[in-house]
Image: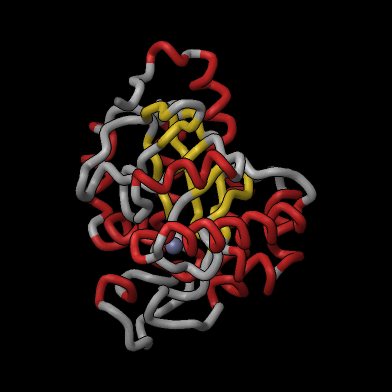
Length: 248
Ligand SMILES: [Zn+2]
């Protein structure tokens, strides 16, 4: 089984807060957990966080992880007209690419909302992977699918499900077909219980979220799962392209 561990790097619990405790306290914890486990992950970073924390973002890549794009200011693309969506995507991509000095491979839209008619925008910017769909919410994407040269890789599980229902989720997850795409936010590893935010955003944050991540990784490692980045998964999928479905 393949596990794609992904991290959405943004301000704390958007759109409810605009603090960045996750960047300062949570992100180092995520990196430490991955380092201790010897796992490489994909970090989808907003243009805004790359602009405010350039050294942190460069540091992620220096540790061998992949940096992808998570929009510019965590705006939902399905609420932006086409021309504005293009502008935001260009801005975010340009911020990240000039910071890192190379082109990006992978993209994930904020809130996993990216209208299909906007896919040409991703192709224009040279993205090869889009992880803006989800298996657990409408329209319930199945496994990875090809759209021309773009590979769409749906997220399999929301991180809050792991925080809130760990004992159940860890039994259900192995039933997923294809790669298991897990994502977490740095702010979840910070205690948010005192914040005036939605119930499911604050429960189980901090230490418990960190412990769940370690248990999740150990669970899959013990069962021989292979952890890889989106970019690596793209390479593997391209070689075996005939085995993955093409979108109509
Ligand atoms: Zn996000």
